[in-house]
Length: 458
Ligand code: HEM
Image 1 (cartoon, rainbow, N blue to C red):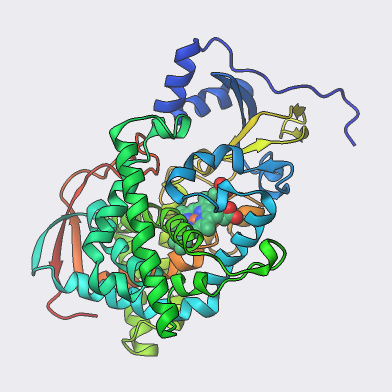
Image 2 (image 1 turned 135 degrees about the horizontal axis):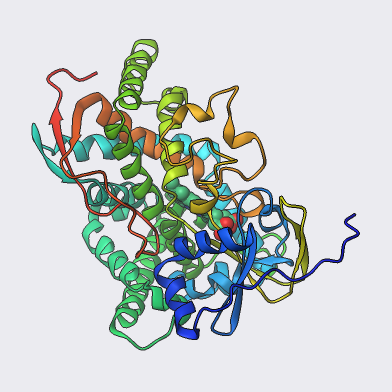
């Protein structure tokens, strides 16, 4: 009920045509900071033939997260993933089919299934770190991407891949990954070698998974992995209620891997880096491991992991400071109004690309006190700064399309860091790293860390 006339958001003018793109591609953080300072929480940036409207902070981002897909659509803005995920799935299908496929993701990642995956998270972490020496130097970005592709191959792609073709499949995924460049977002089919390799790898993966799926069907075996969950998935309201075909199963697997691989390995890295830098945070997490072992024994069960609130808060605080997905996008399919905290109402026109930003929103000083400081206690009652307004903490997104793998990721990261806290001590060799804003999923720049194996494990 605002009676004042409302208008389109202020436009960030004066960016030269190419300048706008460059500024966008190379420095979205700077662009948001400048725009926020000049115009506030809502403003529009023209880039090429598109208008990007930013909604920064919990006061204005509600519509972004809550609106249904007819109003705020993912398809147009995430369609560049089609050559990677494959035809017939996710952003290549209409919203009815997509809605059902998203239910299959939810089914594969629900808590009853997570119980099956936890022992694999723990086993993979223990095996991986058993290979480390008594002391040495590592780069966490590399460490955790290796480890997480191992657990992903076990829990997602299944026993067959993990046991007998891990290296081959990991190489193919690497080629897929290298085919996802900033330029691919605008021109996903540009004829360049990175895209040719991507397409070849995609084909090979499809034929590998086809063989595995066929073998499972022929021998009537069921495994405890996400692949199995997709094999057993059946449409309800579309395609005459058939099961997913092999191509769709492969596509769903690849999409899950892309959603979870870099995001989880980067968050594992920051969780470690921030705890190593902050001695009190490390000590509290170490103390918690001792308490959990005393209470529940050594086994890293799902219940033991769920008990680890200190480690959980350290992880959440790392994700607040360093969210790997710095910008989330939708396409406005209908005009909508937002009122900013100064009481000004704007109408965002149909056709705008709408952007919100975990990286920016998480550093707003009226939402998080001393936002640049690592302070896991901010999540403890009575402070609970993340709960003062909906969509304050959006490291996992939120609302209608919030992360479906958040519990999977949290359990995986807690498994890894429990194994490490119990068996090693660390120190930073290089200064605490900056974020690498050049990559699509933003992680730490390289940083050497020194580990020393404990004489006596916790
Ligand atoms: C969506 C973050 C791990 C599966 C999202 C979104 C964010 C996010 C911000 C919302 C995207 C948007 O609104 O446009 C993260 C972070 C992770 C993580 C920070 C790790 C720390 C995972 C894992 C999986 C997963 C491990 C699967 C195994 C998904 C799926 C969606 C999603 C399926 C799409 C939900 C939808 O669009 O309805 N994630 N994610 N994520 N994530 Fe995650």
